[in-house]
Length: 142
Picture 1 (cartoon, helix red, strand yellow):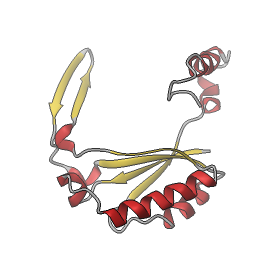
Picture 2 (cartoon, rainbow, N blue to C red):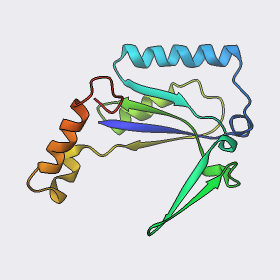
Picture 3 (cartoon, rainbow, N blue to C red):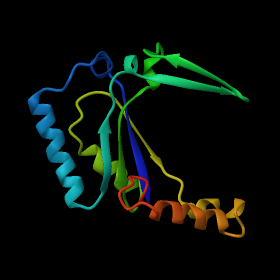
Picture 4 (cartoon, helix red, strand yellow):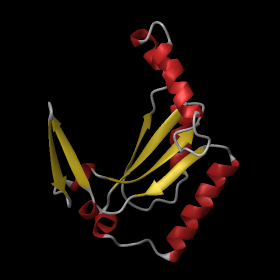
């Protein structure tokens, strides 16, 4: 089971305040534990919403909205992708994280087999797998 951990913004992360050396070292140690356990697939932090853009879709119309975004309580400050056996395992890993403030959301990713009812022939799922294998250096590959 793959899950995405979404770290919500805090006042300091949205303002661009970088973590101190101690906090970075603690996070590095935690990531090392995840890597050694074979759980961590990816982990990245995001710059504040002032650096971002949103693209709004309404039929064929596309509207670009520049950051910063005013409603910050739902913004994401970073993410991790974990390969775990269950949601409970993901929760247990996150309880051990060095976060001192904020909130994370853990959500399972769709897997190809989840789409079987919409793809009875299996052709679309096969195409997805071929696409993932087409470029060995692509981060899309798993």
